[in-house]
Amino acid sequence: MQQRSEQNPRQRALKGFTLSEVLITLVIIGVISAIAIPNVLVNSRKNEASARLKKFYSEMNKAVLMAKARGNDWEFWADSPNNDIESYAKLYLLPYLNYTKTEKINDSLYIYLTDGSYLYIHSGDCMDLKYDLNGLKKPNVAGRDIFTFLYCPYSMSQYLATGQVIPVLNKEMPRSTAIELCKTTNQLYCSGVLYYDGWEFKDDYPHRI
Image (cartoon, rainbow, N blue to C red; front, side, top):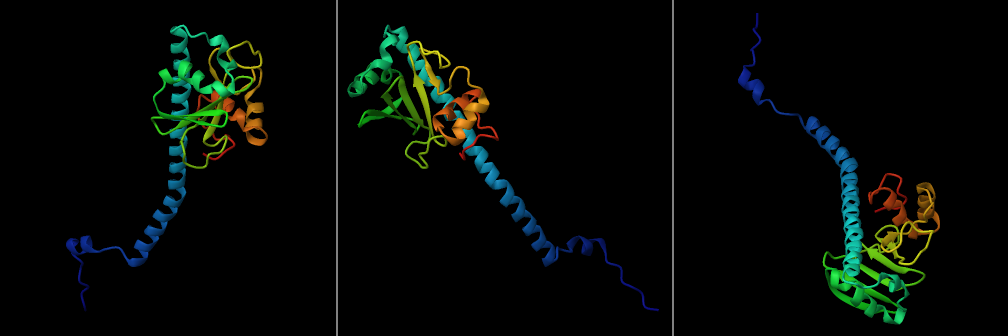
């Protein structure tokens, strides 16, 4: 009777994967990567955008406080005419910001910040500040990388506060209304949505970041 040869432990340990097992493993890894990597990249962009918005909001209001502390009367800030926007910025903002250069384009003054972002300001009913968090990089679209803030030094009851830089958000407006406006008709209110959410991009934020 023929005896079957027993495979010793060393031979069993050296036994490798078959080609089909390797291919199946690679396919599984590819599928997981295709699902996970885009989500990781989106979350990374959202986190970076959130950090930049928080920094901008904080630094702009620090600039306002420092200007006030030096005796510059904030009651007339937003009344600076468009053709004098550079003088306005030199007196009230530029001494307190870290920037590389400024540029006058039409009625707006562009201020390029040292972190690669920029803002541009112009005078309307309030002083409007539009912040592009990734600078000259695309998409340059309101609600995605451009966000509007206001400086309304005189009494305007429809806004959250006066005498400081604020998001675009009417005083009694609920988040649901702000997000609907951000989504459909007026991306100016996207800064108001983010203000409600602590400058974080929640899952229902209506624009791709």
